[in-house]
Image (cartoon, rainbow, N blue to C red; front, side, top):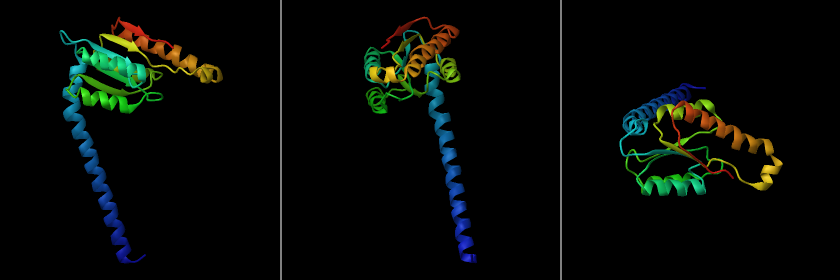
Length: 175
């Protein structure tokens, strides 16, 4: 390796470090500027505004429920792990209702108790509509424990978080 190759490598390393630092700075600025003002709307109860958590809100039934809620001026938080949901549906809803404080999407798995509790700690929900489930007959007979866990255990975690945070209204759609 000669001097020119070493100089090129050090320049490349320097450029990579600068790009990483700028990316980190941009992410920090975006998170601290927009999320703080928007998330406070979701974190506080507001007179005349009902905040509904819709689990499975990126799925077919969930996204239609979200659309109806938004049309009726509800504040909506979608929680979905996108295992069956479609991020395209969420993006359409965000384009239809771009106003800050109306709709937020949180990528999370309801089987993760820490994530569920964090979601409830950071938001002031008035109600929950629970559509997060898997619903394929053939698959359910091939993987019954996975289905049991998804439908029963995850719902129990959700209900425990609701109780811990004083959310008393649940609409449960079981397949």
